[in-house]
Image (cartoon, rainbow, N blue to C red; front, side, top):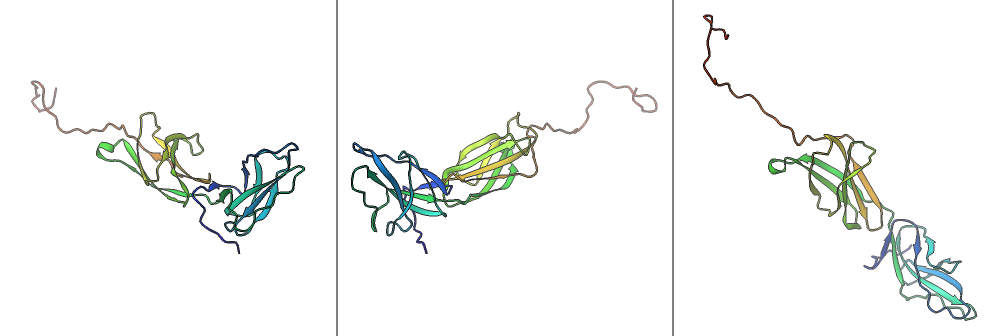
Length: 227
């Protein structure tokens, strides 16, 4: 079977089996290029296979791979009127590493709670994210009065701390839906939103009667009724 190895730190991550590879051509001589061919390896350079040719000899080169995994690539360029360039052989290092990751992150809002004391006008969001390759700041939170949007940003580019406190301003409707999004380094996006709207009235004014005190002289009828 195909060997899978941990990709180098410089690996480009993509979220599709089809992607474009940018390349530069060196001095192509008087007659120009006769062939641009992409070679790839799945085992770190132990074996190489021809993937595709770029018919127009101009960057980018579009390639489609069969499955997820780590690929190493080199291009072989032939110059018209010159001897063919040898393809890569066992032990040659890839020029470019690409990791194809088709798995979306999994994100879930686990709790939405009202703050207390000095955070009484805040909502506290708590979430969980499962993805090995999520971005350094992968999270974004949104709200909308409708479950289909449009969505207004609460906060974007959040670190995965698992918690965020949002001060609910006066312009936010009393009932709204919440959506959280998570993105990984391959560009895969996951979203989770509340099925039911959140009810939040941060500026309720409350009070109750405590007692009654006279503020001036009163007169009573003989039967004790107030005049």
